[in-house]
Image 1 (spheres, helix red, strand yellow):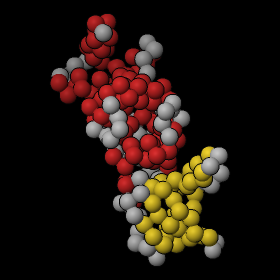
Image 2 (cartoon, rainbow, N blue to C red; image 1 turned 135 degrees about the horizontal axis):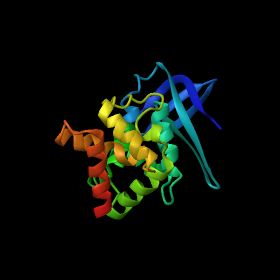
Image 3 (tube, rainbow, N blue to C red; image 1 turned 45 degrees about the horizontal axis):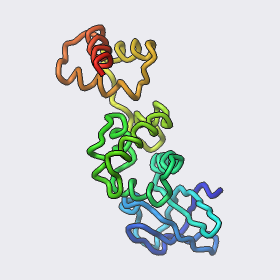
Image 4 (tube, rainbow, N blue to C red; image 1 turned 180 degrees about the vertical axis):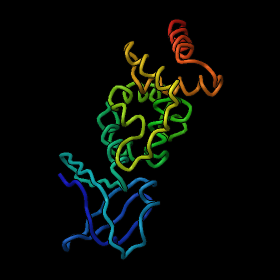
Length: 201
């Protein structure tokens, strides 16, 4: 498996680049987000890669950072999502925003991406929440920005809810929304509100 490539960037466009290393030039497909981070042709560049092999096709996909590559691998592990579909998604939304959309369950934002309808968006949210670890969902991968620091009250509520069997990725955003609306709530009051909402649903 080709983990990364480092060499001279020969060409680039919005979905593909050519990089030369060891006397061999490789065509590598990239997202728009990676393209925007590329230097000018002629400069040395390193990118992380995924080598896709089918019976009739071999393609390299490249990523500016491990964050984007990791999300790409998660996406193509889903039923019905191939490398091209994943690249279309990653060209429309950054890896960090994608995780935030999954945390919020934001169907509307996902349906703004070409080729994703409401049913597909809902399925992606459910399946990605199951596949992504809490650290990935909270943006703690290498190359990702750190998650916002929780207040002591929010942390207490989060820890208590996790002890009750809730996943951090499912409840963190709910806690933050509640505190934005009523900043002076205690941890116990936050927990009650979340449990009440879950009971109604």
